[in-house]
Length: 383
Image (tube, rainbow, N blue to C red; front, side):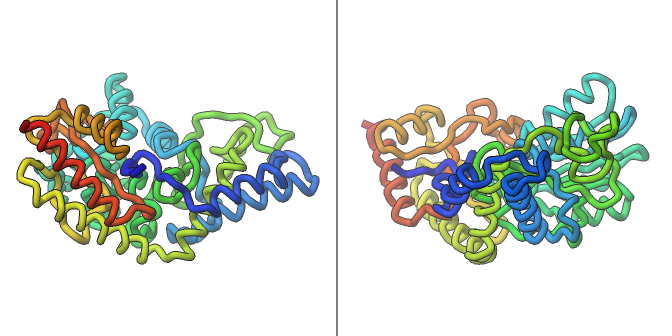
């Protein structure tokens, strides 16, 4: 089996992740922060260590400014809906995932906010001057994906962050596809809100993620409840991370996420990025050799994460992906990838594309096998 769907969720995970989760279930299965006995303290320590590891990865001075969520979608909803007030204006790009577009659309349709979607070119590349030109007096937030889950293009978040800071606008980054691949520093890149998921390139399990909130930035919590802290008060805690972490946490999931981050730190973020870049460039090179293949994106070697979208002339993406799966045991993702705006931008709406998203455990041999499978599909179609 060849698994090329890592942009949806990474598989397999490092063996350390599985071991960590099993150990947590067996040895630290209590409710963290709700009791003072040794098992509850051990569970709380696991969560603390994971928070500290992520703070180190993202260049955050105080780990309490990282709040754990279900996933990146949850984090984006907390940030967007907890920040914006009636009458605010938001700027987003045309390469955003529905996790950004849908919350903004919901608020816009209810006449709560106004939104400007800045168009990228047909390769998915953003001109940052268009961000500048979209700024209004009531612009409260600029939100941008760090990298497209359709084309793999990295967005110029350093430049966008500078524009936001110069204009006193809050900057939010969707790092669902880049956390664990790219170097992210919230301070250097002027990121006020960083949404990430745990189950992709951070190698954690599904059901984990988080939102990094700049010190002093006020956001309303979307739910209230038990936190194990300030239990004497009827009012929900206003301090981080408790403000956003009511209810029993996913301790076993966060144990796996912590082990995933530790794996990244041991291997080295730069090494992982270079390995995936080399593998991605190899895939693009091989696909480019096939006349019937249409590739989408800018394919700048230093501005590409391991996500490659393509189509085969004369074959629907869903059909080709189905054949790859059923005949060749190669798993990919066809269609719109929950990003219709992006597909409209690169002119592949409504049929979408085939997406190969490579992971740390993929190899060039798997790329070669997959390319041969594509050639076979094309040959059969011609016959």
